[in-house]
Length: 438
Image (tube, rainbow, N blue to C red; front, side, top):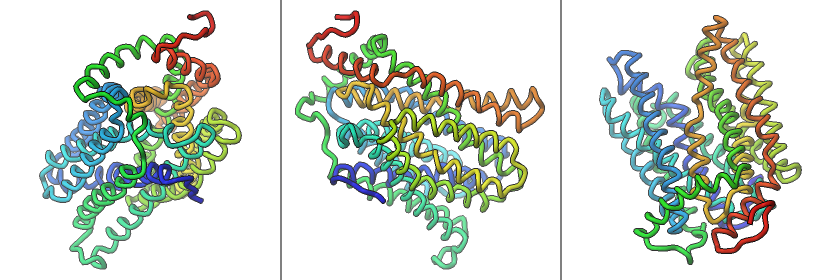
């Protein structure tokens, strides 16, 4: 099912296999609960929640702020791989450090987790920006989906092993589940570090011949970033897509984060939530590839519309859900489209941004992603209070998908590609007629 055309595609996809272990085992699976019950033992629940929220917010905000800057610097100096390696192994070291944090040391745990999250998110900026250089245009939708599929499979395999280890610690010679979770942090770090090697050795740095020294790259990168805001007036397609993406991906991320809380509210136990997460991982693996094939045939934009439609259906189902077994069905539906909407968004974006400024523009793309999950929780809270119903609060997320879909309808890929080519020519000193411009 996983068909790689060459070593570059294999190496690129294996980085998703590598870093998905952090996203699945640590961010979504074990860290939030372990942080409260182990490192914050004796700390008030409200305080531990605030600490964890602050760690997530600060790491996300830092990446969001620096993403376009370091992206511009990487473009000018051709440092995409170097930045990826730096952030990846920053995450590896921080994740491994969690294994050594003792009970009650919540501050050390929060700092190590936050730095790990910075490493994870920072590396993804440059990972995404390498996509157009390793995949042909006609194959880019499939390769983008292949990356997500590989990540879901790798993250799911390691997560399943960790669940086995936690529920049977004596089989692995461990004292209890707490020690098993600490060991899982160590294995995530090793997994991430080892499977980062293929992208280092197999994927070439695009445009390396035109690279400039680091000091000049820094100055030139900052200047390029300032110019980008000016360029966006010529790239209305990009600007419109980013707004659309921000809205519907806010809905996607809100569902993912609120799903666990909603599951607990209808009687799920922690092991039930882990099973639901595993279901999502393994369903997402083949379905991301299917979406990639669909993107090749019908286009990335129609595929995104399909995913948005299914998400609307999933939200309405969640609103009416009454028994916990329905949550497993909901997990399967989310798995059908979660990887697909992410993959198609990434590949669609690559078609409308200048290819000589990919890291910078993917910096903006990831910045928008980091500022997601802002409107969703507010909508849930305000709507829930107004109607005195948590189900009404969840239903309000539909607004994000509908609004994002409407804006996406007006995003013209052909026009965006023309704008992209025009600006690339201008950057290289060429001037062509473009509409009513030069």
